[in-house]
Length: 424
Image 1: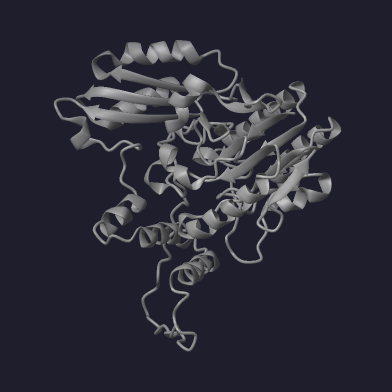
Image 2: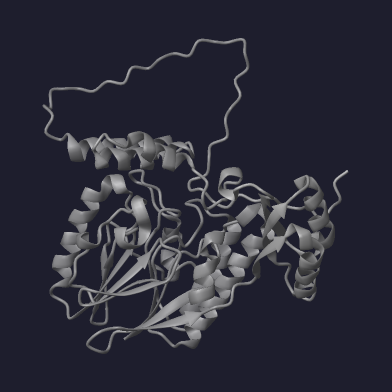
């Protein structure tokens, strides 16, 4: 049996707040669907973050429907799980994928964890936050037992693993059962293909550049999906690359040769079909950065969708003067730093997950996490003990309160955008 595996398409994502970037994500998704049909596969597996949010826009829903109907017309079914972006932890909630069940989408969920496609066992779970890792691990044990009675099996997950994901992972490599033939992973936007257990563990990566720190991996491995053949003793994995819709250009320029550097970029991009995104580092800056902004905007503004400059001042150590986006210390890093020394990793994970939901004002999701945490860690408490939350009435104040805008779910790209209109 041969199948396609993709993940992290993030339909509906308006990167940098630009409608052009939202359309780019739709365009590359259409290319992926066409390539999958060309590969003549038996089925498709999508490992989560199909959409950017759990409440996709009508346009995002329509673009996915177009792709799903194309696959259906070619006789190719799709199996999918919900990722952290397109799922809600709240009890009784459903991911947007469920809307498409009547069009043939086969949704893998906690209620319906597995399917049998011909003689291949396909099982999986939607995204579980790290604060619910105990529940996740117990469910993986159950799926492993079911897979044991099948010759060929696929596990579908949207989780970060410690080996590949850094400190915010939800699973350690040893937590994953080793008796599946293929591990269809999602969540990490870079391409990973490793031997594991009886087969292969693969993150196909995102289909578009969701953050600019993915550019190096894109240059090395491209964006796209994989085609997997299960017929041999061990699965064979083929990388299928799909060109993204817009060019990202990274250049370092010296302030003393700025005019020639800008002229070189201008010559490169003047005939592009789509305006590129420029990530420029200007070294040895000796004057007011505003003057440099004006020069770059005047020469490149009309030819670029967006310009993101970083300035390194002459005679000073850049690390002391400038904090780049990749080095920026965000709220999550501050939380981790503050909790150091307490020696309770479960509480650390709970704090990070609560930050994610409370920063988006998702009070119900936050309450669900707290309830699950107490159930997992304090279920031995005497049933007669009742925890009561006292409601505190707000006193009226003559001073008008200013509502703070909640921060994003994850730190995404921060940019300086040059408008095509001349600022007055």
